[in-house]
Amino acid sequence: MQFGRFSRPLAQSVAAALMLSTSAIPARAQDHDHAGSVTSQAHKPTARENELVQAVRDATERFKDVTSVAGPGEGYELGFGCVSGGEFGAMGMHYINMKLVGDKEIKADEPEIILFEPTRNGGIRITGVDYLVDKEDWESNPDHKGPPELMGQLFHLFDSPNRFGLKPFYTLHVWAWKENPNGTFVNWNPNVSCDAFNPPPVR
Image (cartoon, rainbow, N blue to C red; front, side, top):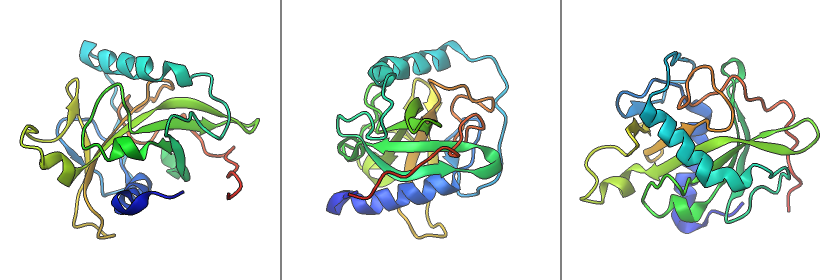
């Protein structure tokens, strides 16, 4: 997969972050450079949280019937294979729209990444989305006061310096199409598995 001159460093950062992300109840911009902890978010969803989940469903309803590993199209391409956290669950397959990654903005109806889970028949099914923006890009806009958020939900921060020397970025998972018992906005989902993943042939 070719990410281009602008996006390659960020794509590498994303790949590392996806392997290292932890889960946390959003109360501030979260630093998740410490893999291994899972924090339960056992509470009744608020109206604002439900609003965000519904916004994600509205934005991705057209992808519900996507079953081919070729993915949803519309500029989304598979990156990173299938990301698994072992005993903590998985994030699944990330279909990334690099044009949206590079636009320096967060919009509820334009998620940068669509999340899918591999199925045992060789297909895929949608589970949610992952919003992502480069920290430097975000903060370069004087209209942005503080970390990004959507409908009151603050993003997780992958900061630097970190063990890989990668650029910081903000990210937010929304499990709109598959329940996560640890919380709708937690990074790892124990109900998602990469066991059925069969890497597509290299072009």
